[in-house]
Image (tube, rainbow, N blue to C red; front, side, top):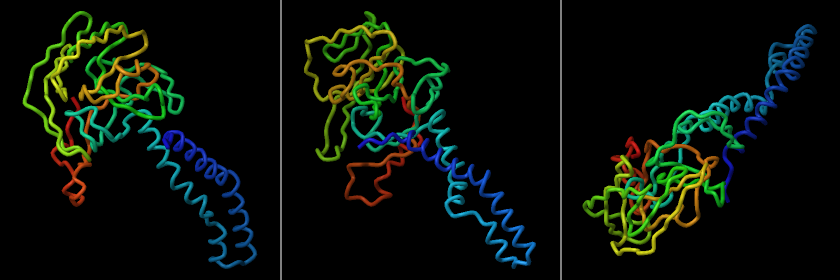
Length: 280
């Protein structure tokens, strides 16, 4: 089951805010009036103090409301954390990487409804983007942005051609990865120059595929692909990403957990060398 976390936080803000607000309007004056009356009639100081105390529910609401509100604002408008669940973005992003996403990179959107209220930055070819999966918007995907609106894209024999220009591809040393269940997998690694943005991609095989994919990206949409080109569920199979589905640009790895090292203790499973790495 996928939970709409922003909606849950928004409901929590409403509930705690209403409880705290009603207490400020009605509860505080009522308790003050009762305590003053008790004090005037000679009541003990302990009894007067007890009358002035907040109910436990109000105390929790007052404590949690500002915390939830701050987290909600940070996640909605500035930075949101995500976890990489699969190997579709190998070799740059590994399963178990925890990343930060810049939420205002492509404009400010209203939380919950995701409507853009104004633009800030320009989306660029080669960006690593997080977006809501068009076929199930409750699920977040992460891929590399390959095609901008209006681009003519051909993908054939594992090579990208964009607007008539073949993207440079340079062979590198192989890439081995310890899969969670399937043991060690070996890949062929290449340096791809995506119109000025250089990044590593991998293939499971070098066998050519003569059937070409030829598409033109429609207005207001984007074409995305995983860097693990032979093992990625991306625009080649389900289509384009609408602009309204963009969440933000991934830019930083703040933690990394080796999901395959199931026999190691907690500290040994942390990939310390990846913590603090920028996402390219």
